Image 1 (spheres, helix red, strand yellow):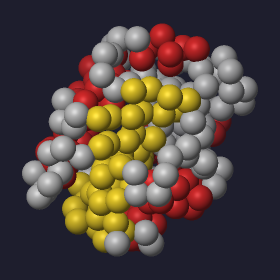
Image 2: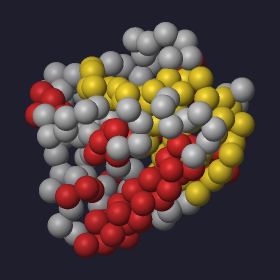
Image 3: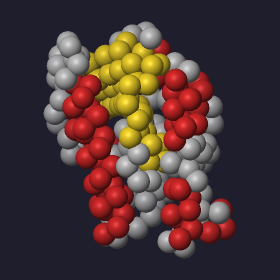
Length: 211
C-alpha cells in the first residue's frame, strides 16, 4: 500500500512512499531486508573503529524510525530527525531510546562536530538542494558518515518493470535527484574520504570518514 504523508509539511512526501519495511510484496520485502542487512554491516564496521563504541549518533531523515532503532542498539546516545508529521510521531512511539526531533536536513539544529557518526539513508534524493544537505550532514558530524540512495537508472527501471509510476518514467514520487553509484561516490567524496561502497540491489551505500 502506498501513502503520501503530508499532514504538516504540505507538498513533501514524508516517510516511505512505499511501505517497504512492512510490504506484502515478497520481492520488495526481500530486497529491503538485504539492504537493511548490508546497512547494519556497515554500521558494525563503523562501531568497530577505535573509540566509536561510546560515540553519539544522528540519523537525518529517519522516517518511521526503523534505522534509528538499529542505531540505538549500537550507540548509547542517538538522535533522529525528520520533517514535521503527525504520522511519524505515532510511529516514533514504538521505540524507547532514540531521541526523535522534527528538523530540516538543510538547516540542522546542532553544533558543528556534534555527532561521531551521521547516518542518512534514502534522503538525499528527496532534497531540492542536496549539496546543502550534504554540507549540513558533514558540518554536524565529526568522524563517520553512512549514506544511501537509490542506484539509478536501475531503481527507476525496476519501477517500470513492475508497472509503477509509468507516467513519470519510473520515478518514485518525491525523488528529485538521481545518482549512479559512481556519481554518488563522487558526490560524497566532496566532503569526506570514502572508505567503502556497497551496492545492495537496487541501492548504493557509502561509508566515508570526514576530513
